[in-house]
Image 1 (cartoon, rainbow, N blue to C red):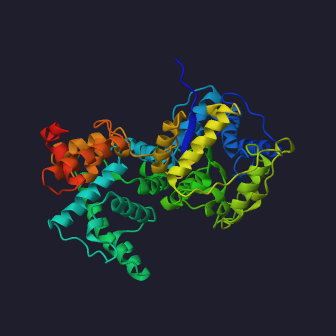
Image 2 (spheres, rainbow, N blue to C red):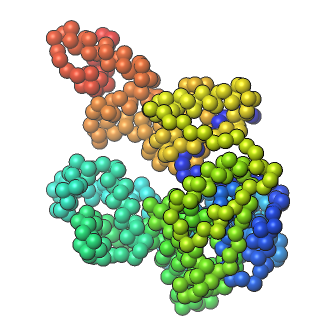
Image 3 (spheres, rainbow, N blue to C red):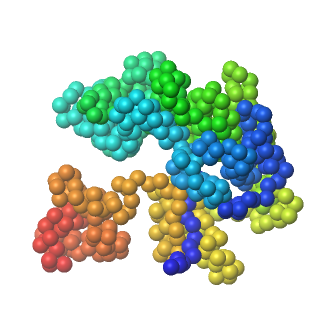
Length: 520
């Protein structure tokens, strides 16, 4: 079974690594080979490898892990950390193909997954129930119920400042911001009282109010874990620190049971690591693990979730402030031409320095010096932008014989990727969306079903927005033009009958009472 070639539409941040010889040993340049040798068999306890985009940091990460195994290290003693699950899944497949052998535990994981595995091993050794990792949807549901109870008067809620209107408290966007604040506080070990004190000291009344919600949230989580057979419920923000504490107390708490440590820990995209991840690396290092940290502090995209790109340079500092790591700079950009390298270098120059900038001097090899110049198009609207992109793709394919598989469009966000995908499909450009981390509830195929179920069960009001989404979903089968025709027909019928209601109200009525649309 074959699939038609497609243009890739990528939702930023782009977390995709090109495979340089999947399943085969890639050809490394001198600096890459030096980094692999020093990480796999060198005497240094910590090595930092920095490089601009396209210099092969991920290739070095995988080759260092493979070289360590080929040098005699057991696969279970090697761990590669990735910034997120999508990157971890791709690197896991590539490393498995590269090694050609199996391991007793995953070789590539996220820091949270590693931490959770440590806590599960500890609970099993002590005969305790396994801990439970609270997912994002569960957190959102708990906060939604707490805020709904405040709004209904069941429990007295905090006094939110005037900048937070009551109408915002019931929205998902507010809950997302609130959850992010609470998780960042938990990640830094702040109790509700600490968050409230910090808010008063910094003049942030919203933080003081959020501390009240935080206290209630912790009580709810503690109550859920109060049953005899329930394990400890841990948020993703605190699971890493809980694992760090478990590793440091392992010999005292679980005597005679081997600690789940590693001998080589490789961190890809270390600029996306948080302070908690750095503490986890320190705990592994204290147990004898060698560390290989690869990153580019100029391309950090997870800072809003606690990532600290300064950790790359901090690892180079001598102890106790840092790890005293050795430093290798990858100086050749293999994935860009000279004009594109010039663009990325000029952008990087405007990024505040995070302690190390030697990687910005990377250059392209002589055989890649030529290449098309970068172009900038400023268009007056998003629709015209999408049309221009579609035109450029079609022109490249039809006139220049560029395969669809060799084209990619990078969108700023998942929402923008959806709009661009729709515009490209209407223009006859085959599209495959990759890299978008849209929650399941917001997927185009799922949201209409959830909307319909909520309306049927009277869990949500059928207002104009919901009616419009349902009408234009696969359930309703209308597009924008068809919906406009329906609205005009309903409005004309209303005016002919002497009424004056808006098309929004008429559309809601048509969906709520199917017989109402029989005259259309």
